[in-house]
Image (tube, rainbow, N blue to C red; front, side):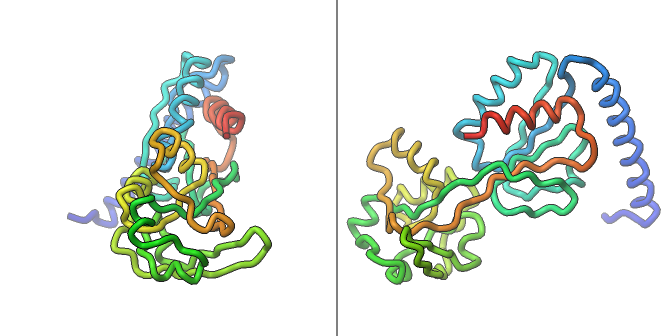
Length: 241
């Protein structure tokens, strides 16, 4: 079934009425001194483990009047899918022209493999040798060349062979590498945490050569944000590792 032109027009008008009603309620809540109301935080699935859950708990403890909903996914931020009170904490380059994008930081990345894989296939000694190894594709890194930069400033553009395994979460990426599926990228911070929890999981490959860092961005709607949106955005800025 597909909507008619009249149906599309009616939906658009109804959506504007619903958004206006939500904005009116939000304006009333902004008049209160305390931070309260509904909040929806969309987060990239890379953040579902690590520092964010504890940050959310502390935010709720500090603001008892807030109701926070966290949704996890891999689809890029889209203002059409959101509503008043939305924030997007996202990993990767800016992708939405309908949302304001604020650079929060970046994750330094590295190349990793499991000791079992290295024992069977050997350790790559130079970027040129990466073509001899299986590549586990994180996000979209398999669809474009990977720029590796040496600590002395040299650069090497590595084009991965087509990957038989493509994943869109850091959890799956780390688990795939631990199972010996090949060589792949991980944020260094994430790999360190995983290694501390499960010693002997990873070996760093070509530690002097680093892939480009992954951007961490905060997306929100244009215009004056609601009080609770500003409060959560400020909280995330202060708690960012």
